[in-house]
Amino acid sequence: MIMQLHNLQRRIFNISSNADFGETALEIFNYQYNNNALYHNFIKCLGKDSSKIKTPYKIPFLPVEFFRNHKIISGDLPVEMIFKSSGTTGITPGKHFVNDLGLYEESFLKSFRLFYGEPEEYLIAALLPSNTEIEGSSLVYMADNLIKRSKNPHSGFYKSNIKDLILTIGKAKKEKQKVLLLGVSFALLDLAEIQSPDLSGVIVMETGGMKGRKKELTRSELHSILKEKLNVLSIHSEYGMTELMSQAYSKGDGIFYCPPWMKIIIRDLQDPLTLYNEPARTGGINIIDLANINSCSFIATGDLGMLHEDGGFEVLGRFDNSDIRGCNLLVD
Image (cartoon, rainbow, N blue to C red; front, side, top):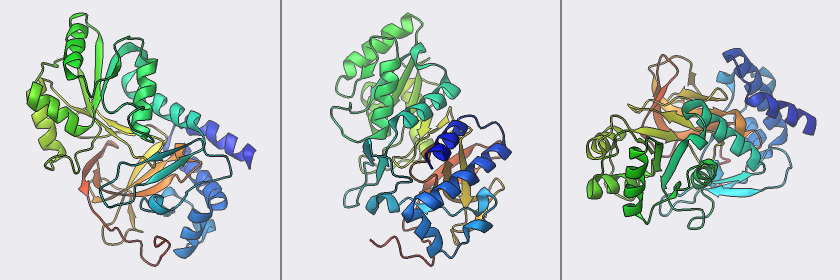
């Protein structure tokens, strides 16, 4: 089993075609079916015969809600860290039991380099709580790692020091340095509405996080305000989840693109076991994240979305109480 796991891990970040992705996804599915007791029971509960699953569009996707009440692990490696979702008041947060932080780091670094180049090229400023202020955030862990890899001494967390943030970015702009400002939506909105600094030339990237903190805005509304108040042409976005090991990125207009080892599949809103392989269909977002090999690589999210012809996707909102018919494993 260990040899099989190592061989699969080596292949994850060398995906070069759709055929290669499909083949690797099926091998990881079979590995997780055989080595993840909960996922195995979930598939059995649905009445699915694993031997008849020959394409990624036939693979059952585990509802993300399972991560709230179950320890979802493939294999028997020891847990290195538990990432927890921020959650909504009154709802049990999701937990991701990570037994290979090196794999997580490799995934987010390769993805960042694919879309933005080397983190060493940037001044990276984060409007996020630091890892000493919040425990178990996969987003903060990623931001902290990117900041440490930045060669700029002024890279860091600025949540409680907005004046220094504005001065630091202003100085970096004068010195023609690349600047990435990464922040949760409500913090960027506060910066825009209260301070309204001129961030022209800066990559401003929002990571979501409006729920429960301010009046709900659509992504389009949020980006419109941020562009006007911060004087930038576009707002970048990161799409990730506590339960995943990989991220998709948007460089504007809310259209996200995945790294080669990650894929979005849209599911039918009325029948969540029906998957679409054509674009322009609106439905639930299912994610294949091959880097999530030690947990579950096939997750049905609570997000509503749509695929585009070029492989990009939009996140159109959220819906609650998604129902996988014929299975009661979600009840703990």
